[in-house]
Image (tube, rainbow, N blue to C red):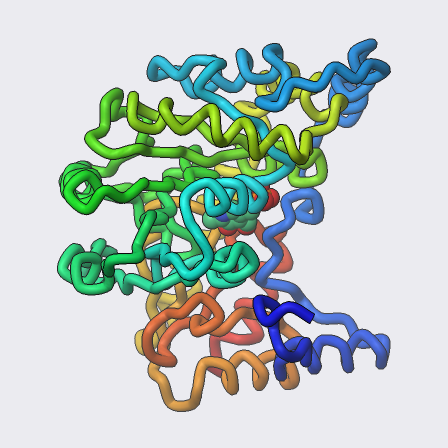
Length: 383
Ligand SMILES: Cc1ncc(COP(=O)(O)O)c(C=O)c1O
């Protein structure tokens, strides 16, 4: 077996406890649910089925970058001068990362990745023979990119920087100043910048100077690739359609080799591509329902936290998660395990996302409202 893979696949303590509950037929409230199709949203089922059953789904016309029709719709969705020829379609954002990592690095090369963040980069990088080096952000009233740390962690084999805008689960949107400094840094060190914007449509409490999208910069000084997909944009992860957008002349120059990689896989299905224009038309109304849920749960949390002065939450600039801050009287994992065993409520410990210290639990704001409220009522007195 390849040394790029984990050396064991043992469940951690929380997963083992969930398995034990499942086996015993005991149910629990899941305050971590991030799959929108399991959150009680009202999807236009007939329209989605119709979008997936047009005449194009009976034809195979392989275009390595993805169908022009889907790319035209995605370019229109983003605006900001994005053109269909700037786009390469994938089956998911995760796949988009793996193609970009193939494009940019040789085995042994390094990538700078955000921390705390979604715990995906290390393995996606390792599977491509690359090493992901974490660049810790810090929190002081809001999250900040640590440019000194970026410099310090950048070595001779660093090829690219990954940022998530807004980040998951911290919700950190880059500020416009951070964007300018980050792109200048990448240009100076000849690095490519990968910007994951899957949650960009979900700004909740953004700072006034936030960067809503990297597409605002029409001509960045370094190559920029922006990632997104239907899993968050249209809350349809099961469709399996993501995309990579090249921004600026330096990234466009890499589109031919990127398309060569895409040509080896031809991943995006005919049905997903054919449905994309119609699904993007539905996206704004699906997003309204999601934003209502996120804001309502945040208001519920604030109201309930008022009775627990030792607990607080960090601002949610954007995204689907909130960080609950608590006194670190035990480890965050021990706390999550205790809440699962004693209250039958599942929350994630912050260290799953590399949050510093044991002071954070991560909750999903996508959780159905009654489950969220009842779950909080059980756990808040015991955190
Ligand atoms: C920041 C971030 N990027 C990418 C993904 C994966 O998206 P996809 O379903 O398109 O692979 C996730 C999933 O939650 C995510 O949180």
